[in-house]
Image (cartoon, rainbow, N blue to C red; front, side):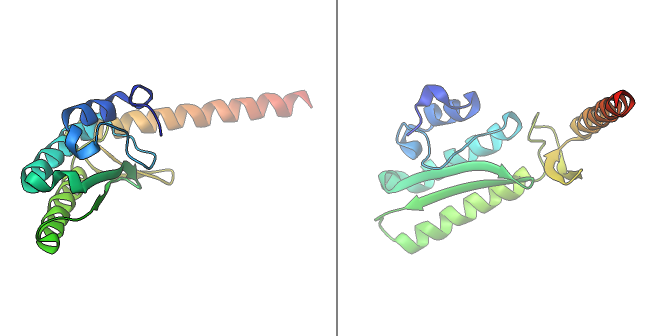
Length: 154
């Protein structure tokens, strides 16, 4: 298991803020949390703690990550009172947060939306989309210049 000091600072801060959900350790599966989505996931965890109450020990966060521009929050619930009702409430809270994240720039937390750039899907605000486009264009220009130099030396 990865040590807490070895994870990204946003995930570490979340684990420290919600020790009962994370059992004071890194999730089982590889996880990370972008700075822009920290607030969304922190609020998700606070809501879960409220709903879980005495059943918090039965809950485990398995993974937090971004995939194809979407927030994914995976979890497991063990033995709990009124398991089905609690499971349904947890699903509702998680789905609400995952949907909310689609409207938040994962880089800075400003209003955003899912964007596609060169096959990469991510959730960005207009500023970070423009920045990513500029970096992509710069990289393409550098590759073209290297290819031209290589062709001229053969």
